[in-house]
Length: 357
Image 1 (cartoon, one colour):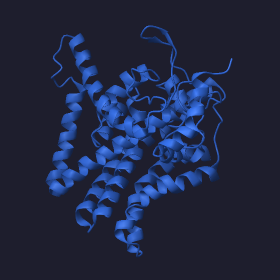
Image 2: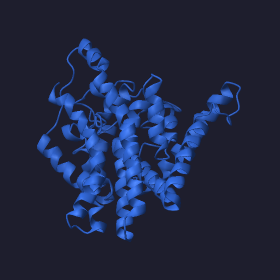
Image 3: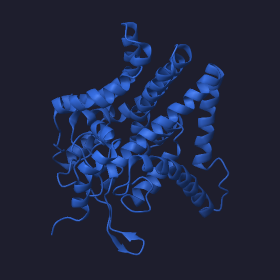
Image 4: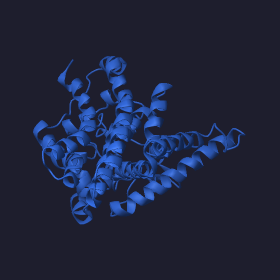
């Protein structure tokens, strides 16, 4: 196995970060400080590792090689394995939350750390899985999303976002000059609303009631409620609150990444309400090797939008795609600082919206 292929195993190291936090506490670091370790690692250490590991711009050379890579069981099973790993991690984190003597700062740190871990370990592989046409992959993706209460993503992302990306109709494409603090609440609300609307339209078009088990949003909401009830049964009211809170943080983490992936880019309107075809020029790309290993090549987002069903291991790097100046971990932090974000990103976005002729 090539090092490049084995690197995707690093995605599972995210599950070790909460355990690392408590290991630091056992070594004498104050507990309310130690629980922030996952965030410090993801947003402080990962950018440094990105610099050390460099970039990966190579692509498969022939269609036959792509087909061979797509068929390997190793690549297919890795995103599926995140389901048990994440559910075990979430249960463990919930148990620690209800049993540890956390202060206010520690409580906030543990919720944020667990939620961001869920954004990486649950929502990101779910994004890979819900695009696939097999039976098991979208099912596992849906369970991952339900575990953070953002199951509407399964519907809206595939049938809404990919259709409307880089247009005013898309709730997950940030407008030029829009701050992340304005974008995230809007995206969270509209994505849930749009998912219900899309399922209602689908079922009415088939002559069926939207309020039935055939409605994906009904089914996945029931799955989420079952998980919520299980957390309450095992851990009581604190478990219920923790389950809800980590889900909100995980979903917000996803939407910050959506902000980074699509900020300021536009497709040309070729007729009223009609836009040019989606290509690899309508999403931001990032070639940082380490973060792409952690995120199953999510940073090759330009090619993902051009070929949505293409599996992560054969996504292409496009040199002419809009290029982020750093990997997602760095850009996430930059997005939280709107003046600096605009200073760095607005000229790049404008250059791709209005290319020189």
